[in-house]
Length: 600
Ligand SMILES: NC(=O)C1=CN([C@@H]2O[C@H](COP(=O)(O)OP(=O)(O)OC[C@H]3O[C@@H](n4cnc5c(N)ncnc54)[C@H](O)[C@@H]3O)[C@@H](O)[C@H]2O)C=CC1
Ligand SMILES: O=C(O)C(=O)COP(=O)(O)O
Image (cartoon, rainbow, N blue to C red; front, side, top):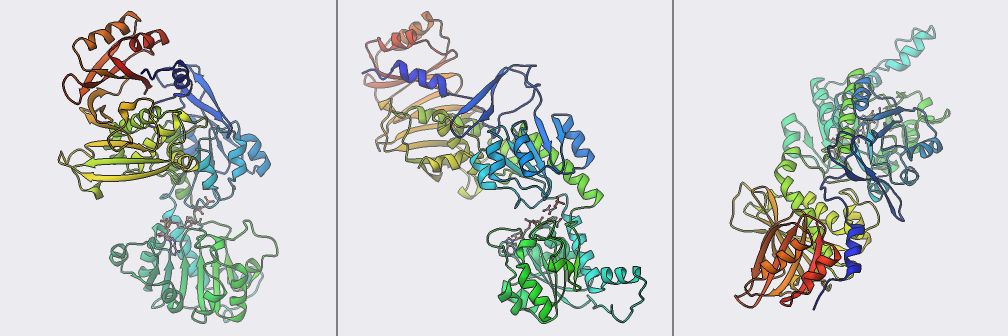
């Protein structure tokens, strides 16, 4: 029985795309060869631009808020940079279809509408700072747009601003300053409170929270912290006790907020919470306005539960002219200045420019917010396995008859290392990309591969197994199993009834080592023809000369058999795309029972 059909071949020719394992296909005229890159896509279909060496223009980066000069310079060395500040939402949506990357600070809302308006061209959003609550991450992921942030460069600035507000609040600096400038000399009105010996609760013991804690200790304060995810060892090293939420807010004289704004932290300080606090507590917020129920804070200030507050951030920024907190005598305010030092802004600008350029070049981003974030060391160790992963995914899906309707996929990773030593997130995303890309008409990358799999109802499970081997290798082998489907190539179905393929990396080269129950050993380069044949002498020569006569160069052949003179599988690597005529000639060889052409 012959499995080859010309319309199947045509389908693979049309849909097969880049075999790059990188999250974003690179955009740069310096890329040394002609390549196809995704330039625009919509939910309904993909549009591709063929880019030739020397003719592809640089990518365009829209910088929508003020960014430090060093970062801009770095961006200009790679991209066309459009600095357009103070755009309205409508203007941003209109401009975005012409941009490959967008850089924002906290003042720009990157909504679903922005991603939709980009018509698939927008590939990276860079948040020049930490908090990404102004970016619709769900929409970014669906549209395959990577979001990166600059998580480290403004930590000290935010911690210093928190300490500044703490001192300014405790000593009424802002109020006294305003009063004196009005010609008043009111020494007794502005008597403050001391910090030494007081308890401060640091809510969120991340980068800013822990730097704030160090500084508060230096001022002689007793520091406690609440953070459900913080390491107790890290806290202990700084001399901070991690305590439950209720204990933190009930025992503190000062509360400083340093957690991100998420659905779980929204209005985390509310009426009920204020009622548990010590009377006369003082609150600093350099995190996000919406972690406090602002109306509840006004009530707590008016009732005297909260003696004072110092706020850098507001639910609505800029706040309305009649915002009760801004106008409150007991409240010290700054207009979201936490990250606004010369040093922090230069650092953030460089950090985000490097992340955005790296992402546009197709590098894996170490500050990705909506894709697997992998340290550079792990990426370099896994590099050949990532190539293998994508190719196995691409092969496996092409073996499925009908090309769709995959419900259940199992990925097996076998390693001589302990299972805990292997972070498989990027492998999983890469195999998934390989599985979906050949059968999808939307742009698939590491950002949206998992989302697209879920949308298609594809359940992907993972299994890590320990086998003998070399512990210097992160992996010995990977397998992809697809259950409950028919195969275009019956021999790819193992005894368990699943389509099963296996690959290994040998001398840095990814190789296919098993198809169904048959052992093979072929390097995964070029394209592949798999044949099921009666194991008999002369088969390699027959197939080789059929292809040779049709001018198809064979780069390798491997035969795997169950027992001599029974059935065997021949895997043939070919450099060129065989013509229909060449494939028909293979099909006409009498001992060949089944065969399939697969594009890698
Ligand atoms: N006002 C400003 O200009 C600036 C504001 N920020 C804000 O500060 C936040 C913190 O920044 P980093 O310390 O750099 O981030 P980070 O990610 O290092 O720390 C955040 C910490 O909050 C913890 N957390 C999460 N949920 C929590 C909860 N329910 N209760 C207590 N802790 C919780 C996390 O475990 C983490 O340790 C950012 O998300 C941003 O919103 C950051 C920089 C400047
Ligand atoms: O980094 C953050 O989360 C900040 O809030 C800083 O915001 P900005 O970039 O100064 O608008």
